[in-house]
Length: 518
Image (cartoon, rainbow, N blue to C red; front, side):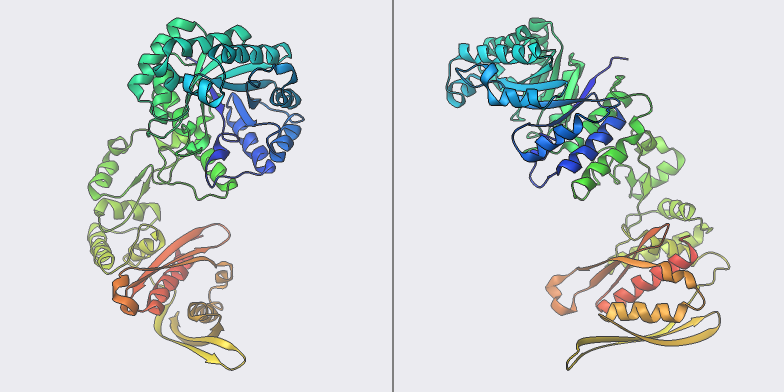
């Protein structure tokens, strides 16, 4: 299998993404994860540009890296100057990384209007900068900035810039679609010419401004690129960089290339979510391959087919990249969705019971419920249809009182009457709000029979107004997340009365925890 070098620039180009910020410690943690999965190069940042990057390189040089080489990023030396007295070049050497990646100008527009120099002097600084780093013992990768735009403007000069880097000793020249506007067919035709002209290893670096970053990268590899640069989850300036997660999966599962050590592809899901969590971002669950929704099936026809053949609506086996297939329940569901959920939760129900629950779900969703993110409520609806099932408790009635008291402020109290194992229990409790008071009262009633409730913790409580044009009469949907030592589950309730909606979600949560989550 042809080996493709994965060059990760999440720590440098990725941090140019709006809202994506990493501390020096964050960078070290992500770099270690990237090294574990086996990428070839990790670009740590631009040494000298900020204290975080300086600290990163200081720490990285004393660490043992199993698979990856750490690269420092910078530019060619200044116009009309030389690399030997250039502060940027000195910072690259001071980083003490084995690899230095520098970028230079390809596009005549940038040479004349941004650098404000001649095309000849630009070629000089490219060659001399690469040669100086090479003479100081560095492996040098050259990023040809705006290569495709430059090629379209002056193809001969664009190729000359590559030749200058090659003469200087660059081991790889990387063709950059810096503005992200090149189409795949243009990438293919231009690379065909480049390959014949330079006869030298080359790579690809694309941005996603035209939603073509991944396909442009794959197109370049098919055309002969041996290195691909990008970021985890496609983070990057403006619309982002090429998403290395999708590229690595496509290369190994669909194109017959090798880009990671054997057995590492299964960690892609973990890597994707790890990077998002370290950056304190909510993972994009609709990402290809690694999003939780990537193999989630909602339509009844789809699920019915999936139950006969998992290949019918999945392009790969999700386990190969560490993900898993999921069935989502909603008003679009069919019998197959509910049967799959029953099997998933170990509930034994027959076809008629499943149809009854399905009809209830469709009716409830029409009234404002949403079961996609409340699988525990679905599990309980199925469990209640199981032959011989007896609920751990039954509600008789509840009462909630909220008042303002002098010197105490808002005060909430709830009374709950439930039947537990034939005994009627009548309890009351206070809380910092009506839902908290109900929760405390219910727990107080059940604790003597079910001490495990002490380990149930309400971890999230979400409220959504569904028909806001109805004002205070609007339907309210409540979603409750609960967890114990080993599980986490979600339940839903909906009503024009927020207390009733909350009670339904709360009661489902307790019942699920007692009967299913263990």
